Length: 224
Image 1 (spheres, rainbow, N blue to C red):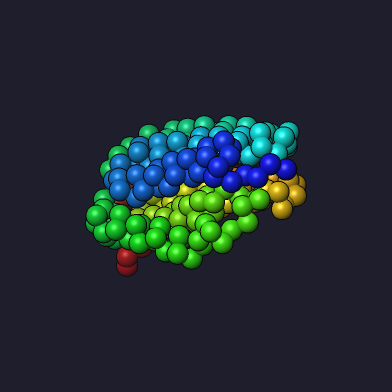
Image 2 (image 1 turned 60 degrees about the vertical axis):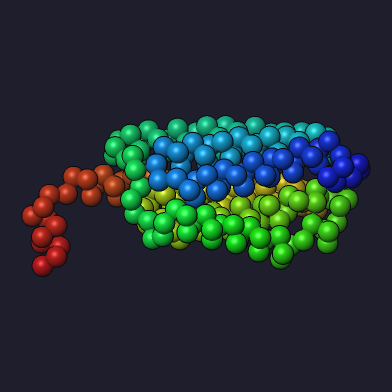
């Protein structure tokens, strides 16, 4: 098998994809608009599907091509459209004001987490025969930034987007190491995570609709 290192074409494309996904995570962390949350997640998922296609070309795996197509269809198109239609537009959500920290503070924390990911998982210590040198620390940084989004955002939908970004980071690291993992395990984990996302969206949508239709006397009764 040809080495998937930074010197190979596939390695360069994989590194660039990981950098783009990290930038999308930073963009989401530095925004207050719900539409942009979803747009950055959608773009990140499209880049993730491209990364999966790059690994599929490198390994000559038809199963990975199918996984790349599923990633594009479900994570890049279906979930963003469903989130916008059933949550943002229906509830008229525009600007997120429920932040526990300022945007500049969040970005500084994100930079520290990215540096920590590189210090904890240095590219020089990784097996170059299996992975491009920078992808694993970058995917770790995306996971940490997704978790940070969930911490600094208080609105449920913003936290949901953070969870999805975190899952994208996990998936990027998984496809990078695909040579050591059976495809069936990878596909099973992916489908389980998608099912969990769909359940969460349904739950949040139903809860938000109940809160939106609640009357003031009902709320007073709950307080009493």
